[in-house]
Image (cartoon, rainbow, N blue to C red):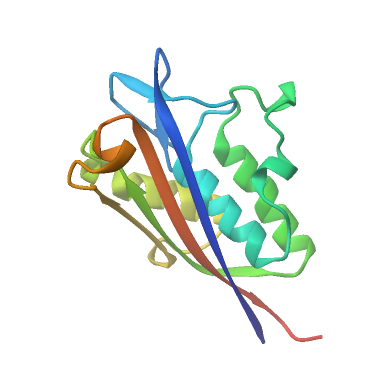
Length: 161
């Protein structure tokens, strides 16, 4: 077996009048994140980790923000496309581990639902998907409540040919 790792990162600023979506889950909050799609930073970081692990370019290359087809699209739909690409390349996801960096809102009540949505879309068991949330103790753009960032790491497996 061959193994590959990938690392992804994304960050979006808050924007009034949008829904906040993280890991495919709508989180009740006064502001959402700015972006062309649903601006789901967690799913975007995960997609970039998966694409990097299998030797592909980033989500901006695969799903350009100038393309009207992706306007307001659910990032879980895009993640499904990435999973399809992994299958074509004969990779399977061993596990994914993600961190959301946000001073607010409080995310603990939504973490399990995020894990479930991501695991379902990846086609793996929930115990193979980690999602954690942390603050920056008031430091940086996330700490000032200007937006949210996320990081993800993945392990892929491919049978030797």
